[in-house]
Image 1 (tube, helix red, strand yellow):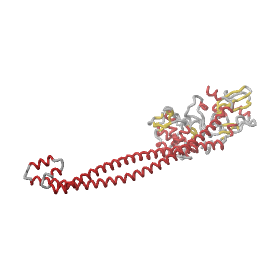
Image 2: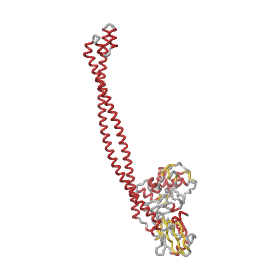
Image 3: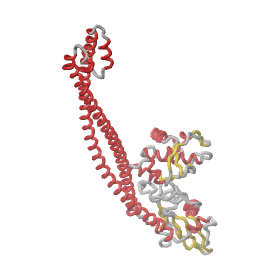
Image 4: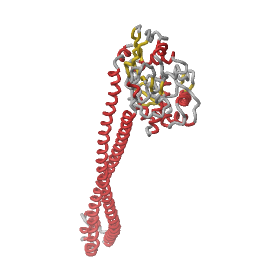
Length: 477
């Protein structure tokens, strides 16, 4: 009741909500363009940084290849000299042995060998002193020196090679990181561009589809006739809107995040739906009953997830009727969509939400409090839905009624009976333009009812051949 009283105000004030929403869409468009420019600049910077890092990496790899070759040559040279040294050391050992034998086992030479600080000192005491000092000893010492120098060079080269390999590792990590950052920037840029395109389509829709009937709040020329758009309550996802969005390249997650603001997707296990059996089989029947199997796959997935979320929250009371969720016989494409989203549900603040949906919004969905009253739900905000102009319910009309005929309809219910009817005036609209309050004036006084109440009474008592008000998005024509 409080929600209804808050909504009963002049049209200019209430319908200003949609004007504010349009201004908000323009602000969002400006923000999306700024984000696009930022990510585009970031992508250019990352492109440059990646190119520079890849150049550095290529140079470092070339230098490493050169250093590895030098190390390999140095190691081969060390190996070759080691072979020569082994031969010479063998000759030196043989000379020592022969010198000892020739001494007749004189321990003097043996002691000299053991006590000598070097080969030359020993040989100066033996009979091969001249030969070994002039030839073998000098050669061995020289080769020993070369080996020490080559070992030092090899260690330096290996140190340099290891440093280069470390540099290459760091450069490789930098290039990999830059590639990831570049991919992220590309994705951000793509999302910003897609958001810009979407907001441009909304702006274009608002400019090209000015729904005049939402501005006509009193009967024209004393005749009562209604023109309107959309169907049902107008809350949550528009099925024709989801179809049009998918046809324009948006995936099911994007569709759901548009119509159910701030929600996340998580998985739940299989659950039983009272009187309907296992959840996934039931969801497939619901999708078949709610939308056409020929619609885009992303639309079918979005419908499957919305239906599953609603069923999860209402699993103790489902009857497969249009009042809850209509059911049909699923085809292969529908089973594929259900399987692709198996167990997925919509959540807000960690709780599964009853994801309401309807056929056609008429261009803009509605805030929940403007339809059923109660507390505003952050995930059930009115949003633009400009992709549903191919819906058969995009626009509809009632018949024309005289004042007396309209009076005859309204007096059937005490909540709208006002004696001799003077006029009917729409005095409240929600963000979508849907009627939230209607004032009825007559000889017996003035009464105010909600838009949904007026719709229900009119549809209940108008002639049988009258198609009725398909939604509360209407005005006089």
